[in-house]
Every structure is written in structure tokens, then in C-alpha cells.
Length: 345
Image 1 (cartoon, rainbow, N blue to C red):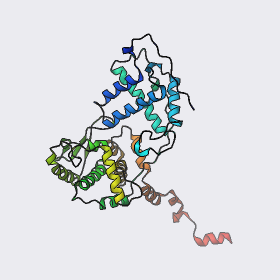
Image 2: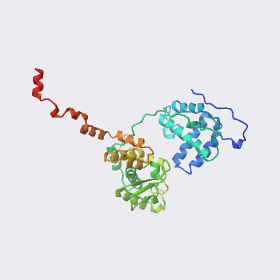
Image 3: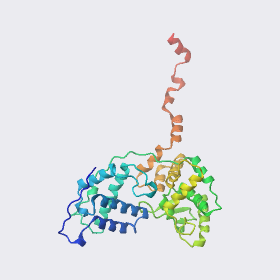
Image 4: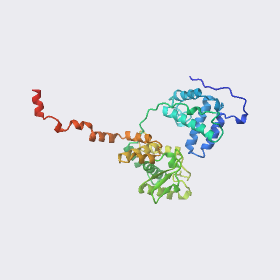
């Protein structure tokens, strides 16, 4: 069991000038909640809160590089997965994936850089220890796809006479064609859609940069119909609850689980799986990787190229069509059966 390091607090500074971890967490969250999505802001609050849990409410500058590495080891080998998540309270797996640990490193480094920007800390006097922590090597996982038959069965059980099912059908079509993330969809407003050009602008994105994506007339028509259904609520949001308030990400996920149960699916469909399905289908249909990168909102092309390696059917078809064994099967280069037999006699 790793020991949690805590150093004696220095008493030379005034109490109000001390940057304790709790104060650090509060400042970061209050800033992020106004500049990024709610999900991203909560992540900063959760990650800085994990520092407090591990070290206690010490001062930020008391964490040295060795302490930061000890925190990383705790995340990798001792932290219980989904801790504090009610739906996963019986989940007993210990240790986070390398990708999750790396997300902690990047997020905490970003949080400290924010303190420089807001002039709470001086970069000359306080070094960002998490910026010096080396990331763990990650195993690139294959994104989980939703089988086409499952998605069709999911849509089949929807009865659009009911508002919740009408909303769900529109959600699936919008996710599939716009490749958006669930938080981007939930924050979509009527003014974000240009019905003349067929362009949707996602403003609440993961990296806080707006993204413009074209969609078909079919999806535009479905969005128009849903907007008309919501007119009685006088709301600016497109996807709402039955009472007219903006639907939350968790509510949308719960609704998808419920529909998945109705459809008799062994695995629940999630919004992110539909996003993956849209990307894979676009590759099957011949989209170029740069265009897909822009529409998915990936900052790095390497992230998008993962989808080039998960379309198994295309790989099988390509191998069959372009197999290098064809050079061995060129009849003009092979001896006739008769000649070959004579040589064996």
C-alpha cells in the first residue's frame, strides 16, 4: 500500500495567500464552469478533488515531482474504478487504464497553467510538476461499435406517437449523421441550425472550439418537426425533457438503456457508439479521412485514423480484391499441368 505523502505546511505566508488544494480546486472549477462544458468542468473538480483525497488539504506548492509520480502510481494500481458512481457501486476493479491516468496528468497540468494565467501563481517561483510527469504507454483500444442489426432493432421499437420516442429517433439520426458527442447534442440550440444551407454549428464542444457539420434534408426535416413539437415550451434548446427543460446527458443515456431493454438487446446502445457507427459507415462509403477528422472534431489526425483499422468487412473485401497472392496465380507465369506432371515422373 502506497503511503500518502503530506509535507509540513509552511507558516511563513499569510493564511489568505496560501494556495491549498481545496482553494486551488475551487478556483479552477469556478473558472472552468464558465468557459467549458459542464462535463469538462466537473472533470476538473473531480480530478483536483482526487488530489485532496490522496494528499490531504496541503498547499499546492508542497507537491514535488516525486509526489506527483506517487499519485500517478496510486491512480494506476490502487484507485477503485467508478468510485462514487452510484450505478457502479458494486464494481470492484482496482486501477485505472493508462489512458485515464494520462488524462489526469494532462488535466492537472492544465489546471496549474490556468493558475498562472489567472496570476494566482508565479511561474518563476512555482513549477508545474505535472507538466514534467511522463505519460504512461497506452494500448490503443478498438472503439466499440453498435451492430447495424441492433441499431435497426432499437429504432423498430420506437413509437413516434409518443414524444420521448420521437425525440429518441431524432437523437439517433442526428448522432449518426453529425458525428456529434452527447454533450454537444444536448446543448444544441435552434439558432445553431441553418436550415437554408443544411449546416449545424456545435458551440459547446470538448475542446471549446465551434465545429460546423453538414447534414441531410432528412435530418433537417426531423429536427424541424421536433422543434415544432417543443413550441409550447418556448425553449431555445432542441432536445428537451417532457417538461420543456434542456435534457441532460445522463437522462439521454438512461433513455437509451431503457429503449435497448425494450428492443431485447443484450448490450445497451450508447450515444458514443452511434457516433462511432457514423464514422465507420462514412469510411465504408468512401469519405476522406481529413473531412472525417473535421466533422468528428478531432484535433489530431491519428485519433481519426483509428477508424481506418476497425472496419473489418472492408479489410476482408480489400484483402480478397487486392491480395498479393495474385502474382502467384497469374497463369502465364505458371507451367502447364502436363509439363509439371512430366517433371515429376
